[in-house]
Amino acid sequence: MRYTFTQEDEEFRQELRDWIRNEIPVNFEKWHGVNEAGDDFEYGLKIRRKLAKKGWLTMAWPKEYGGQGASYMKQVIFNEEMSYHRMPGRDGFGAKMLGPTLMVHGTEEQKKRFLPPIANGEVQWCQGYSEPDSGSDLASLKLKVEDKKDHWLVNGTKVWTSMAHKATWIFFLGRTDPDAPKHKGISFFVANIEDCGIEVQPIINMGNEHYFNQVIFNNVKIPKDSLIGELNRGWYIAATLLDFERSGVEYPSSARRNFEEIIQFVKKNKNSSGQPLIQDPYINKILVDLDLDIEAARLIAYEVAYLQSQGEVPSIEGSVAKILGTTLTQKIAKIATDFSGLYGQLTDSSAPFDGKYLKQQLHVTAFTIFAGTTEIQKNIIATRGLGLPREDKLTVKK
Image (cartoon, rainbow, N blue to C red):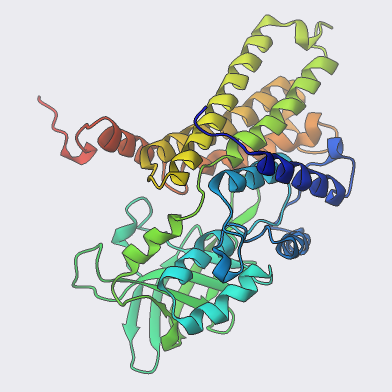
């Protein structure tokens, strides 16, 4: 393999694993994780603060900003173990996305104001990008931001905003020059949700979960120092959100844990005819194929991290990892539900796996949509990897 873990990496893996096992409040085999977007939010913050004290929450940050300057492979280990063990506490918006952006584009005053609370695990951020008419084509966003001399006036709506109902702050893109080409005339802002009077409305998904939100700016006034970076350069500023490790290793590592649960279920249970499930060749074939899918997703995730460690931009490999990881997550939830038989349609403790995989199946439907749909990822692979023409440039002869 081109990517290897050093002895120091493996020692860190064991230290992290021991710490996680000690933090889990129940027997590991009975641990199903928590819902950080719901009633377990405060518990997630508690774990986040503990991670901060260990120096792990912002381990990827440069040392001058209080981080460890951790290698990409060490970050992979952290994300891999946390996902496998279903641990809450990671900060995808503040530590992984906004922090790096502020380091590059923020003023010294903005860095001093915003970075320490993130590093200490004290604040929840959310991201305001998608709009009702702007998703995959994000540059077509319409949220209007006007310069009113002593403040900015914001009007418009963001949608599918994850964790906005729990967040204190939001970073978002707004259109500051309506006459400029769509990729220009966009600026990057931050705002305190409550202090600025920003309205957050819940979007309940088909699994009856509240994770997404609609965020409404109705004549919202935000301070002049809310602008991050240069005016009308927000599109390019947002691109720096992708600087740190983004291998997608979370998908195969969480899938591996679920896979192990399914294996144990198959070993212990029988079908309606009294035949052990483990003796069914059809089921065994499904499990073998699933194991191959998990391993393929894991290896491409490692490849992405390796390329990043070499200073390369793994745009094609990143798209492959996103497709494999998200489709794997959907596949494993469906298989677990199918293996449960008719009881798989139940979502309480009387169902196999306590009914969690039916809930998960409904929840992960969005995985192939957010953060770049599968279709968008395939377009990237086609154009950048295979040299094929863009989809909108294709012509069909009649």
